[in-house]
Length: 216
Image (cartoon, rainbow, N blue to C red; front, side):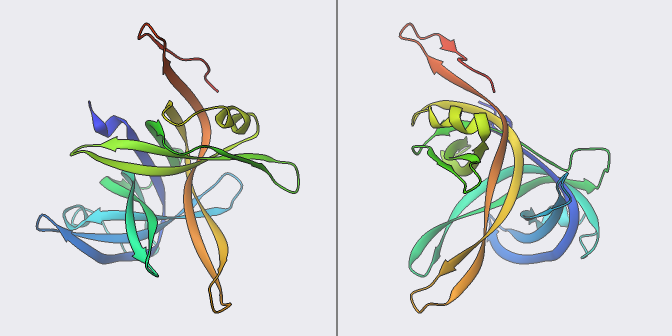
């Protein structure tokens, strides 16, 4: 299986936080920076990007510059306050100049639903469904990608089951939320997720045939 095709992300925008060192893996240093990526509405998504020192030699990553990043939306666990927290970032495989003629925020993932979907409605009666998708990676690793569907997509995702294979496309978005600590302090944190634009589900029949019951 070509694991590069199961998780493909592209983001393009302004660097608002320059790269800072995070870790070394197999003798290569890795850094994290933040891109401000525009939505059609004019709102900005602040997306973390992980980049190797090798790629940093090819482009100017100064604050205020505009760049495009191709790679994968990956997850890892980080211990905070004695609890495991799912962290997400775009792992850069290539980086280049910003192109205003290209959609600045695109992602396609192919994986498996690994947690029961959670359907809800907002106070304004907007339908939402959260779903966690496990995407296989090389070397027996997996990325766990939080996704969110809206409207009729939300109703459809809510009908799915753990283990269903899903092929979806959309965009990566950031969302601020507030958390109250044990001492009553209110903290503002940021969550990252994939906002689903379209999806296809694959299921196997008893005869082993793969069917696509619905593409949304």
